[in-house]
Image (cartoon, rainbow, N blue to C red):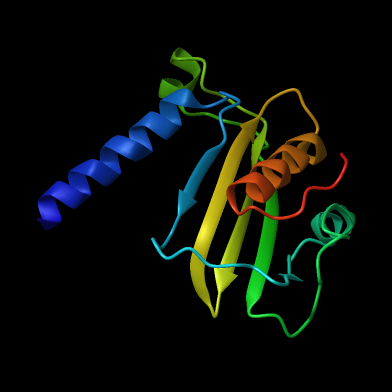
Length: 141
């Protein structure tokens, strides 16, 4: 069983590396339990991400004591020296990721690579997808 899971994980990781600058949004529900999200606490270690996320959830109950925590990050790659990535055209400028945690455990996550596009644009796309997947009130982008 462990070998099968390891093989599956390696296959998924390989697919993500090869797809590189694909604009596909990768999503995952970390649990099968469907939960209603009455509030959010926005908590990113990057101030620019916090500044971007808050207005996108202005119609929701944003509370510092909420048990649902939204974390966001953007990462910009300075240089990719992986010859495999370059050979298949999988180089990219960076990625954006959002994750929702419920009582400290992962509930949902989404990630997207970007190339030649501002990370803010890709973060808005992720938020739009998150709001659709979690059936949250949508705001205007």
